[in-house]
Amino acid sequence: MARIVNTPVLSPNHYWRMSITKYGTMIADIQTLKDPQKIESLRKDILQAISPYMHDNVLRLDYLVTVSTKA
Image 1: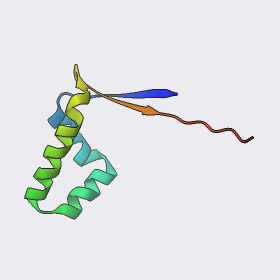
Image 2 (image 1 turned 90 degrees about the horizontal axis):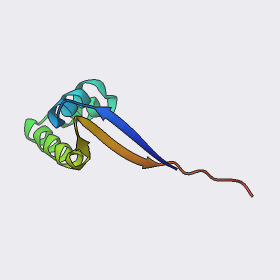
Image 3 (image 1 turned 60 degrees about the vertical axis):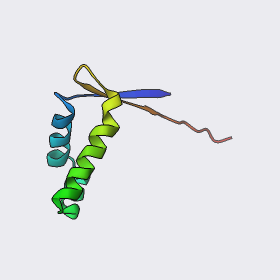
Image 4 (image 1 turned 90 degrees about the vertical axis):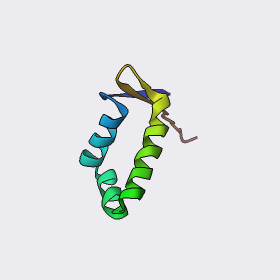
């Protein structure tokens, strides 16, 4: 089963700001990195990674749900 998560964002930079202030794992990552150059490198990598999935102010993430049955 394919599923889609559509996250409304104003821009890739808006997604970055929202991520580093509201998502626990990203907050922890930023606190761990501390070095501004490493944080900037992470920001660039994330913005590059999400850019193909940004359309009309929506970040679209597809994923698969797998279901197993016991024989």
